[in-house]
Image (cartoon, rainbow, N blue to C red):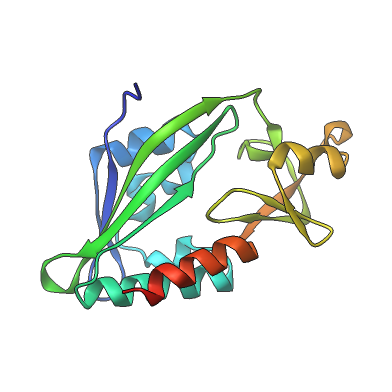
Length: 183
């Protein structure tokens, strides 16, 4: 059993983050996410925190559909260096043009800690793209599990790791476009 409450946040009609739950800070601290603590995100635009044009386009559609009264639910991953996390996201309209995002951890799987996913690790200016939904990594045009990417890219031997950026693999892009199209 996972001992964690839902994490939720709300954006206003101008897409500024205006509320985060108490669980937000516990989740961020547990993942060394000091840059996304409540004091760092409140009052800022949601779009400051969504990396990648494709990912941003999908989220803009989700926000638009939610404001129109269509609740949107979808699975996603939010891995920590030492575990895989499978979540369910629920996005729906709230009063005054606000939109609420609520994520629930469905399951977790422990794994050996991966430096590539540790935000405190020193980074180079090189970039590796991670899918915002399934956490797969793009390697030579293919999307593979992070452990396979580390091996394929020879990252076990590097003192500094490449920086992570986010995008969307074709499978998740197709799935999310299907979710949005059914609303």
